Image 1 (tube, one colour):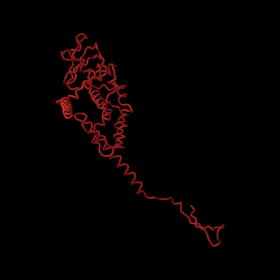
Image 2 (cartoon, helix red, strand yellow; image 1 turned 90 degrees about the vertical axis):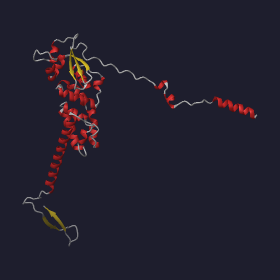
Image 3 (cartoon, one colour; image 1 turned 90 degrees about the horizontal axis):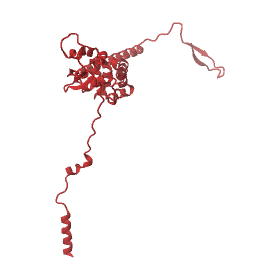
Image 4 (cartoon, helix red, strand yellow; image 1 turned 120 degrees about the horizontal axis):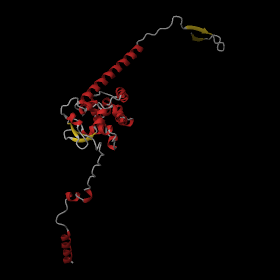
Length: 287
């Protein structure tokens, strides 16, 4: 019996693997290595366009029609329509054809913002244009102001600045926290020159915000930072003027002397209460 148990023990020992599988080998399962789906290709803006914009430091190509950009933007008009016969990028557009397009470099611009503007102007809008984030809307607004084409993008601007897109900054004003780039839509309304939205948001910030407006500057640089500081200063000054006006109006009411007309005097009349005791009476005030 003891030998049998020993043999059984040996058989058990031989069945145990000499090395346990590591966690790294367990984590590398075939079902965990799901490849990411390729991004959906966006439709071309102008397949037969005679101009290719090379935007950004990486020269992102955007093919467009020069006539559409010239009609929508005076800046593009100066850029794409030459005033002399000197061979420059703008002069090359005169001889450009769909088979031999001209190349115009815009190294300082945001490729995504310029592409969004070109899609709106060419009526080649896709889902990505309709569902821009607040940061993307702001970048488009800065580029649209630079090229002065906001008027030609009116319907798209209304869609981007619709009521539900403004809830973030409205909630930020009510919560007293306007930092963490929660004021992007306010700056976008300024760059888009949308006076109605800008007035609504600034009024809400002045009335509802607790504390300073320095949060508008958080995480910004360049033109955005300059504009954010200007708006913060203007909002603080307007709120201080409102407080001063309210304080003055309250004090005027508090310290205003009370005067009565000369012909109004309180008269005390002693009236006998015929229904009460004979010796008693009621003291009444008559005017």
